[in-house]
Amino acid sequence: MNYIDVFNGDADGLCALVQLRRNKPLDSYIITGIKRDINLLKQVDDGTDSYITVLDISFEKNVSDVERLLEDGASIDYIDHHKTGELIQHPELQLSIDLNANTCTSLIIDKRLGGRYRAWAITAAYGDNLLEKATELGKQSGFSDSELLVMKKLGILLNYNGYGANVDDLFFNPANLFEKLRHFDTPFEFLEQEKATYKVLEEGYQQDIILAEQAPVIHETADTAVIELPNEVWARRVSGVFGNDLANKYPDRAHAVITKKVDGSYLVSVRAPLNRKLGADELVSQFPTGGGRKAAAGINSLPAKMLEQFVSALDMQFKS
Image 1 (cartoon, rainbow, N blue to C red):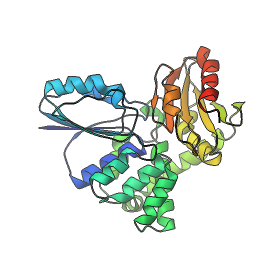
Image 2 (image 1 turned 60 degrees about the vertical axis):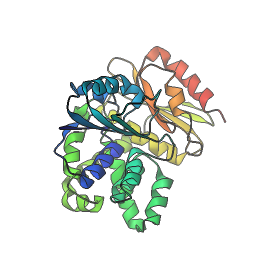
Image 3 (image 1 turned 180 degrees about the horizontal axis):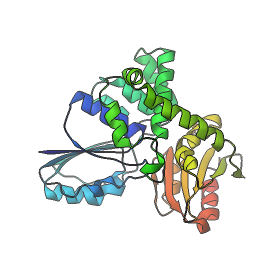
Image 4 (image 1 turned 90 degrees about the horizontal axis):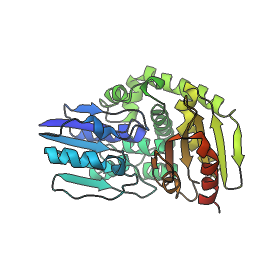
């Protein structure tokens, strides 16, 4: 049997797989990439005699490859929380999908494992900007405020590392970062043993956030704001976590962080208002290459000529 683990390269995907492989160690083939690289099942050439675990990537964007791999004879365990499109049924397909805006893939895994590696699940929830949910679960689980702060910081940094136009933009390839994380039952053990890794991410994050906070706001209403970042490596890295930061500072407002790309188009990160976490997926689905979930979504390549249309749609979607 060939074991293949396919996961989103952000905090949620990483922490989900860490939980699974701490619970059931496997010598598996790893497939991952930048956060926006969600058509990952295309990289599985053949599903023959394979057990494939899929974590934190949209079923809607991968359904054709799910069908192809099932036809090859694969068994697939698909765990996610993004917009699904039409689901399919197959005896060798197990679906654990929850579209609730206050959950993430790692929290779905946490339920499956009975909270065995809960600190990783909480770390992921913080990374996915589910701050209230993460704090509530953490306090219920007996973690101190200082421990929760540690998990929050790590979750944000793991998420930050997933953003970029390609793996070269990142400080760590998510596959390599997973190899660093997988040896530890808790984030606290990881931080004790991997101080240098944490330092690289922390310093990079602080530098990039300072630059992002100086970026121009090109559109602003009582309900929405659009911030434009330049075609720079630091901007591609920070776009998602900067969107989360804005959402936390202005919880009644929706935000779009648009980052200029080499070809003149825009990479777009959308955050619904924290106080009504709905509509981000509906907004981006109106545009080519859009996808995501109710609270947070994105567009991989928005043509410059469609920017005005996008801003109008943003205002319409989130008008209070």
